[in-house]
Length: 54
Ligand SMILES: [Zn+2]
Image (cartoon, rainbow, N blue to C red):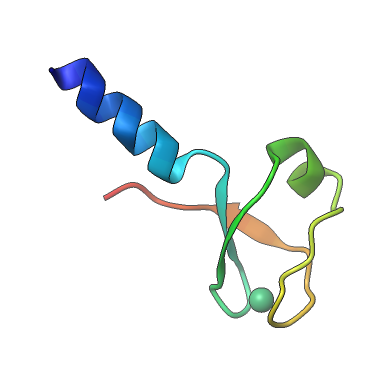
């Protein structure tokens, strides 16, 4: 069952990023994040960090 929980967490946290400026959560392709193609819907910045798992 532990694997199922991990899978669920992966689904929730995978490809989730947080805007470094306004901390809006966004789901996006990591490759696009790295290339700066994703912009925050709130402040328009393209600087993101990965969402921390808690
Ligand atoms: Zn933002």
